[in-house]
Length: 122
Image (cartoon, rainbow, N blue to C red; front, side):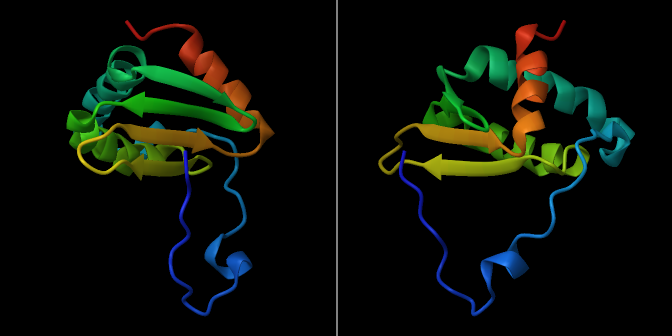
């Protein structure tokens, strides 16, 4: 997996990366009308749609087929509201290649993800 940095904006890395958010999920940050659908989407993506899961030092990377792009982006859009401590990186391969979604963060994030991934949602 290769990473690319955006072109410089003149801001320092410290300015572009605020202090880490506390490790606390706030499901109320997702509109109640969308909450259940988001939880179902998260479970489906991480348990069914992910073709591969790689262990990272500070989280996990998930490989998805290209046709899951919209659902992965929708997942990130809402998940970052309730779990502001996650760092998401989405690598989109050219020519309809696979997507790699990395979810990382401080040391506690990996433990949190391990407990989340330990059991599939009902």
